[in-house]
Amino acid sequence: MKSWKSIKAELSVGKLVGVLIFVVIAMALLPTIISSTNEGVANATDSGYDSSATLMALVPLFYVIAILVAVIVWVVHETRGMGGG
Image (tube, rainbow, N blue to C red):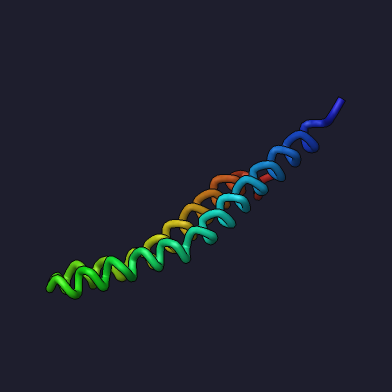
């Protein structure tokens, strides 16, 4: 029979692997998002919608920020309560 600490460690490792897979897939999709956004910016600029093009150019930045925030929130959630004995 496994102890509570070993079960908790296995769950944490499983969750860590899940988060790493999430980050790898999200980063693999980043070039696609960048190329699609660049095409949209070019189309918006040609059509005379400069404000839309400016906002569209920021989509990859917001995508990366969202990934970072998701990982930080996960880390804070998983490590909450670990400091106290």
